[in-house]
Length: 464
Image (tube, rainbow, N blue to C red; front, side, top):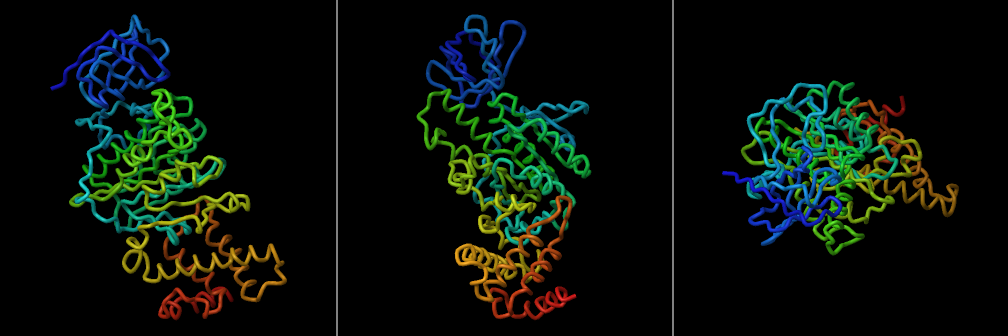
């Protein structure tokens, strides 16, 4: 049973926070309604509660909240959103309210946006391949259903285009029940329009739920947006048996809102001014991905993290890397060469890749091809660095060959059209064509049976 209690004892307003005195039994995370006294009202959430006061975070502007005239009603419940399959194909704001031209959504259930904790013993190991149609990802840092894999990017790099392409092209083998939940966190109006138009042009909007928090929306709303999006994803995955890909763009804006909130509360700052509990807070979002035993659906996360100053040691990407299962790293040097997507294999990793590849999932030679391409590209980078010191003429013949391999690898394997979709067979075949540039004795990471089957075929194709 819910009890609503009204107080007219606002002590102060500081930034997005309202301090209410003489409050009893307020619960952490409880939703409040603030009546301004002129007929307007705003929602808020309890951030801190003691024996005689509560600190409330306001979802929106605090302009117009008067200490004398405004009142606060504690609603006795947490923030909830109504969920329904009718959410597919619709666009919502950062608080979960429809902002498109569609009709209102009928729903029978309301879910707590903080989600239900997943019993660790009920988590199943992710092991199903998700084909994104992008060679660099599918071939070298394979995405697995139920995984959380962030995209580490920088200002001006094409992470929006890459995220939209993955959302358009991603599929799970043998499954038609595939949905995308997209959450825009503090992005510009132009970027939001880009995503919606991309989904619409690709015909994928009907299987997409979009939540849009713009840069000019209240920054505190960014704390809600990813949690609301994940709540919708959990409903579709665990109640409607869908495989859901959640794209959160951009988690850096979320972390900045978290820092702003911490500063308003006058908390002792941690690294670079971010709150000391940011690791735990980010984990409460990232860990909502996964596969649950007994449930047919799953949640896979792709989280865009723009690294301030391209610094991978910055607290946001650093903590994200500890929580998640690898990363897709976008490289500025590759981007400056005009290569799209500018994914650098040397900075990228999928820790669950082995679970999603091999016979019956991708192809039996996948692991060996990936390892050999990694090794050959690393050797190519070493040769390039050496040539910048001694000159290309001073390189050995094998180093010159690896130098040529590196250029071809970047231009035919990594480089891919923004509308080009390659299946895993084509991706691995391109890999073999590149490996056929090298002498057979250099292929130390591929089983001999696969060399016999694919290497010579690659040589024949190159010679044509």
